[in-house]
Length: 375
Figure (cartoon, helix red, strand yellow):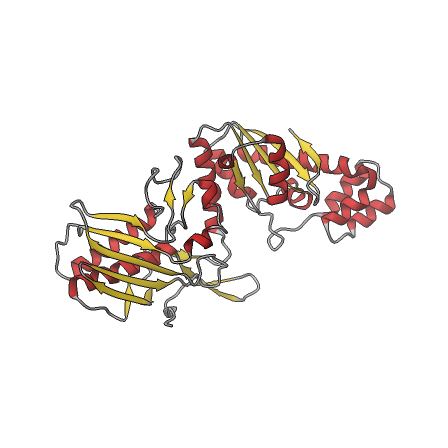
C-alpha cells in the first residue's frame, strides 16, 4: 500500500520540551488534492503519481495517490490522510474524491460513503447539504480551477463538475466525534480552514463546541449544558432533561466554550464537571487538561483553612498530589469545599462571559454525585 510521503516543506511545530512534532493535512486539504488529481485525469485520460495543491496560507503540500480509477465519464482518486502527530480520528483513512461532469453553474458537492449529511439548523451549511464545510469547498474549488487553468481552459470560469467525497470507515469513525449531536448524520464532516492540522491543538474539538452552541441557538434552546465528561453530563442531565442538541461536550476547553458563548450568548449555561477540572477553572485556568494546567493545592489548602480545617489537614492538602486526595482530606468539610470551588469557578466564568448569560456550576464526584453548586 502506498503511503503519503510527508513533503520536505512540511511545517513543523515544537513542544516546549523541544520534541519536534509533525503537522499534518486536514481532511479538506486531502479532499481538494484528490479532486484536483481526479479532474486532471478526467481531462487528460491518465493519472500522475502525485498531486500538489496550494493551501490558503501559501503552503504547497504534495500527496501520493492511493486509489486511481478512470471510468466512463468519471475519475476517482483516493489519498491517505496524514494528520502528522495529532491524535486525529481520521488519521490513516482514505479520502476519496470522484469527479464527473455536473450541471451548469460551477462546482457542486455530494456526500459519498462515510461522509455525513447536515440535518439541523445552526451549522455553516443548511439541512440536506453534504457535511463538506465551506473552507474545504473553497479549497476544492480553487484546486479545480488551478488544474483547469494549467490545462489551458477558461482562466476566469469554473469547471461544471460534481464532486463526491467519500471516506470509507467514516461512519464508524464518526461515532468518536460529536457529529450525531450536531445533527450530522451518516458519517464524518470534511473540515479544515487552513488545510493544516496542528498537533494537539484539538481544533476539531473546539470547532465542535462552537457548532454545538450554534445548533442549540438555532433550535431556540434557552438552556445549554456543557460538561467536562460523560459522568458529569449524564448526572446533570438526569436532572435537567435537556435534548441532546442542548448538550455540549466541553471536555477540557472551558476557554473555548466561554469565549464563544461571550460572542454568541445563550440565556442560561450550566457547566458540570469533576472536582479537579472545576478547581482549575476556579483558579482561572481556561484549558483544563492535565498536561496544560495543574491544580493549585496551596489555594485549596487555604480554602480548607478558611473553612476551619485543622493545621494538620491543611498541611496535608498542601502536600497532596491529586485533587481527589484533597477532597478526601476535607472529610465533613468536603461539600463546603466543593461549593466554594463552584462559586469561584462561576466568578471566573461570569468574568469571561462579560454578561448576557446566567451561569450555574455543578461539581460532581467520581460516582456522579453532585457535591457542589453555584447558581
